[in-house]
Image (cartoon, rainbow, N blue to C red):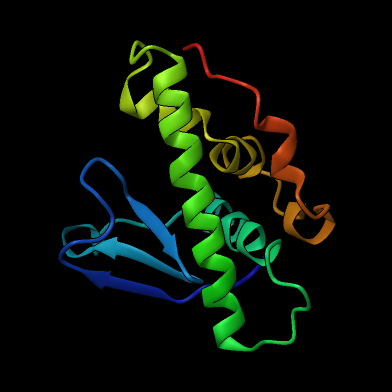
Length: 135
C-alpha cells in the first residue's frame, strides 16, 4: 500500500467527505484532525493515486508527470460524473452519481484489500465505466 502524505486544511475536501487525494496528497479538513484515519481510507486514496499513474507513460518519479496524469484523471473523472448525473436523469443525485464514477467504484470495491495496489492491473477502473450504482 502506498504511503501518501496527509495535509490538514480548512477547505479540502468538500463537506460530507472525510478525505480527498489530489496529486498524490491526502487532504483532510482541520476539524477532522482528532479522527483516526483508517487503513481502508488510506488504501482507497492510494488506489486513486494508482489511477492517476495509469495516465503516466513511464513512472520514474518526475513531479510534472504526476501533475499531467492527475489533470487527465480529474478531467475524465468530472466528465464521467457529469454524464452519469445526466444519464440518470438527475434521479440518482450528486452523491450516487459520484459513487457511480468508475474510479470511485474501483476504489470502494477494493479499499479493504490491502494488497490490491500491488496486484492491480493498469486501467482496472475501465470495467466500471458503464455501470451505474442504483442504491
